Image 1 (cartoon, rainbow, N blue to C red):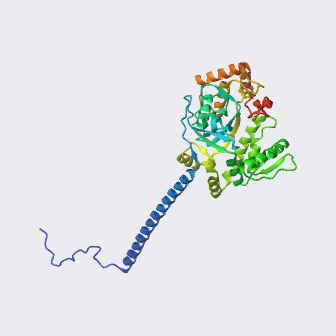
Image 2: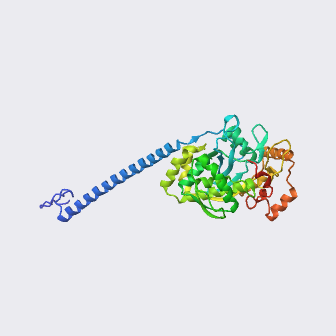
Image 3: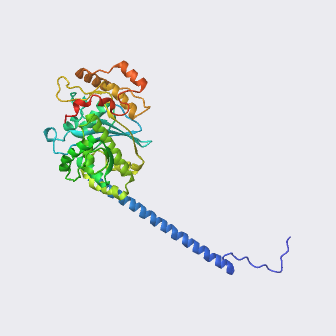
Length: 408
């Protein structure tokens, strides 16, 4: 049995109760100061986060407020059943703002029709101009020029016309007029373009009317000779309107696509302040089916997009002096179905595609009406040696363009 010790031991003292040394006191104070500093940093971070969230919400609200200036139109879109997965297709319409109304006082015919196809993965944008005089099926299964659709039923009918005739899945559109384009070019400080002698002469002539329509000034280029020129808004729009040169409407669409490329290049280099100024000025002149949310989503990566190849459609075309039963000049697709197959290969390379029955029906009807049928053997030869009319842009169509040059 253990014996009790006579000398008692000191009772244990809790660590917090014993007298601390000077060193321990100093360390405790430093630790307390560190905790205070950490709490302050956390509060500052929380405050900064709140400020950033508030700023982001304010910017979003401001952007939505700006986008409310848009003329927003909701479309009821029809397709032939095709969807282009991984791509966003948008129809771009350039409308004549000279006060020429369409049928029954409605919208005028679309002076420019461009399909912009955005590859959502690579951010590459391909542009295809649809020649405005191209014979295509309109609403009600009658046949007329492509630009008639906009005059008959506005952007909705124009988008549906493109989807129906080209087996596309276009869900949205953007429409602008002369003034909007002139404003953008002026706000960007003008653009540099190489002009031929013919282009200088005709641009000077078009500038007179463009200046009257837009209310903007310009300086006539004199002497009229080929060279590189710095164009303002009126001159750039006039350049894009030229038809009276070799190639007629085909080379006109090439100029339009080149102008879009130049504007896009310069806009990417402009600062956010300048972009904001352009938005303020141009939005009231724009009509679109894109919602503010969709526009903001696209705007986030706008500087990542690059414009790739551009072409004119149809790739293989004829321009007869007359089409039986029709008045005026037409661009006739020589085999619409084959042209559309080539179009899909250009816009969506490697994607499987088989023409729909609707497209085949339309293609057969156009061939029957015009008498222009594709040559199967010639098509095979062209595919083999790469000399198809569509290769290299609009060159194939330009060979027959003379009859269109004087037709407005």
